[in-house]
Amino acid sequence: MGAVVCCAAGGAAWAGPEDLLPQKGDRLVLGDGAKAGQPVTLDGLPVGGDLVEAVAVDAQGNKREGSRFAKIILVRVAPDQVAEDQRAHAVDGVLALSAICTHQGCTISGWSHETKRLSCFCHHSEFLPAEGGRVAKGPARKRLPVLPLAKGEGGTLMVAGSFVGKPGPGPA
Image (cartoon, rainbow, N blue to C red):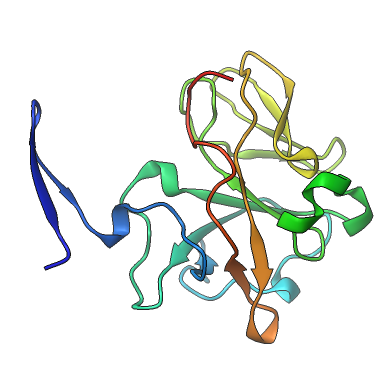
């Protein structure tokens, strides 16, 4: 139960809860490092701190990590640096975005504290998370999708809605 099997040209494919993209009500946990699996809290994300990988976990405890398009990155900037039209998606300056570059699908792994830009090391695209993942430097033409956040109990971070835009490469 909970699995769907289909017959595509490439053979059978399994789609379970882990394969779904983050959904409203999921909680965020740290995705890597010594504290992997622990809840993401506001206290654990200092303003101007490092890029953090996160994983969405549903109410049943299923991690939504079966699809690379579910990868999430978090950054925290001063709340007044978040663009007015993005403030509803952020929590105290914390922004969540798709970790998949919209150019060729590489994983976003760079963060500049000085320029407040995320970067993809495959082809050097740069994105502005505080401006809704807007492309600052190509070759990417499509912005990084933003994942709306909400504050949960004890300052934990929760998913407040679906990605704003389709994660991964595609038309702008």
